[in-house]
Length: 226
Image (cartoon, rainbow, N blue to C red):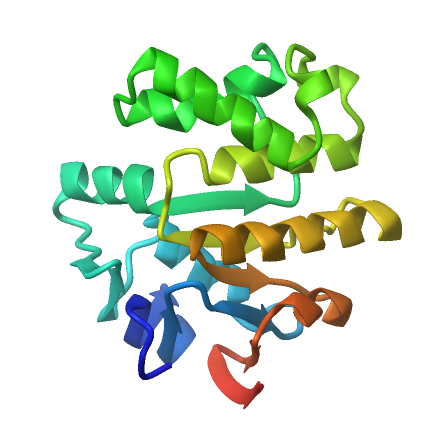
């Protein structure tokens, strides 16, 4: 960790919904290219923490820094730009746009940050090749299998060259074989592009691609293993 650039820093983060405190002083750091699994039972606060990292939920105390930039809820334009440029997302339910083809879905983050059209198309195709789906470039999500959709989602997540990927149960809706392929791709993409990964999972098998596993319970980090 000492020689790694810090990409994600969570410091004394608290969050409550009404009178119910959900996060109790969370501290966590993730370096460039580092892969960290966040595990714990349902209700432990994993999803709330991820929503805070995405900027969906404002934190009540502490601070979150991504690639050297503080997430500030009052600076909406800055927060939106930080999310578009520095963070890639992978969800259990894929979240692909149904009216766009595979390659158009991948191109979208590049379009949102103003990437030039030719460069955008070339990068999207290269990424499609890297996940083994160049032959499905012009298929829409409803004609792809679950495993194929998640591979497209992985390519889309790194289209804009983010420093951090937030992955929320990315194998949760896949069978064992496809889930294993997606995990292997997440690991190889993280290594190839030096992208930090925070992987939220219930599945201990998924932690095999990570260098550290952090366990949450009742809104606190209670254990960490390497």
